[in-house]
Amino acid sequence: MTEPTDVDDDPSVTSRRRFLREGGALMGGAVMAGGLAGGDALAATENADNLPPNVPEWMKTPGDPMGSQLYGTPSPFEKGVIKNIPKDLQQYLSASGRTPLQDLDGIITPNGLFYERHHSGVPTIDPAQHRLMLHGLVDKPLIFTMDDIRRFPSESHVYFLECSGNPTYKKPYGKTASDLVGLLSCAEWTGVSLKLVLQEAGLQPGAKWVVAEGADAAAMTRSIPIEKCLDDAMLAYSQNGERLRPQQGYPLRLLLPGFEGNMNVKWLRRLHVTAEPTYSREETSKYTDLMPNGSAREFTFYMEAKSIITRPSGGQRLNEPGFHEISGIAWSGHGKVRRVDVSVDDGKSWQEAQLQEPVLTRALTRFRLPWHWDGQPAVIQSRATDETGYVQPTLAELLAVRGDNYFYHNNAIWPWRIAKDGEVTNANA
Image 1 (tube, rainbow, N blue to C red):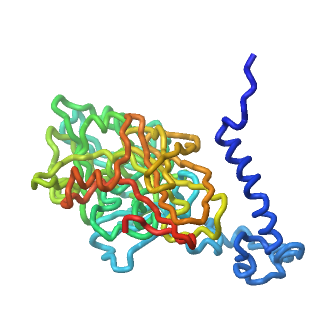
Image 2: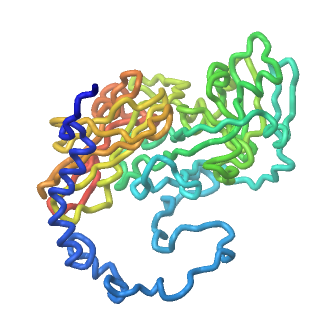
């Protein structure tokens, strides 16, 4: 017979109980004040006649007909939740748009907010005219139509995708979570196993690399080790249940779970099986790691364990002391996140956060920690550990090893400073 469990030992039950106990008076006061804690409710409401016990305007007339939106759009009240695109960015040379991580919940990034990174604009490709060429060290060179690709058995997986320059080691680092690590998103990808496609052509002895080329004007090209191609690599044609967006490689892209985003070649048109890497521009002059002694590390494919608190985070404000849930995301290119620790005293002590299920390999993992803010200045931060035992380092620890010449693969801890008035800013800025 199972012994009864002490609910006080259950963090989820304890946190709910503490919230109800400590937040009861707060919530009651909020209702009396008009709905929002801090007395901001009336200011945030254009028409007080819509507040209880009155009948709001939107109940008095029928809503928009279904036919007015052939493709669903967000509420107009969420119009500020958009991609973070720098105003001075040269869009056709080296463009990027960041995901507003601080405005999202869960682990899946909506397609319209998925981060972008491209090198020569976004091509408009007719899928009926698109072809994938497979040649080189194979028994049977092949050319696939999109219909051919979709005839292979399909599979769907949730994976994150992150640019290795997310962020760089150069100040200023940014104000918000999006500024810092917004070149990161997570989706459910649907496509076919690259291994199946390679087996269809038949790999020859000596096949060690696959050179992938995109159909954009930059002919984006990267070399992929054959071990990855025969593991979990995918040829993806759908994202979150619909066909890829043009910005994400429509009609076909390469997906390499856990590898730096630049290698996940979009608008995929060619796979060249070779004995050696091609040493393209993107793996020589770019996407290499300069060390303090002047040497360069090449082929640093994997994204290391990383995390960031998204609420509260830079650009936000705590309205008043009391209960606040600390929430964020963690990920690792080497597999699952095993734990996330959170510090609310500038790294002096750490508490283990609760990981929200599901915890998937090479996907974002949401973490949460109940916190009672006493109204005094504080520095909060998170630290991820993945299933290999690797622990996310501080920025100082990374710089001590890699020096100031480093540009890519910054997976440092990012602390947020909370001022007495509740304003949240980047503590490393």
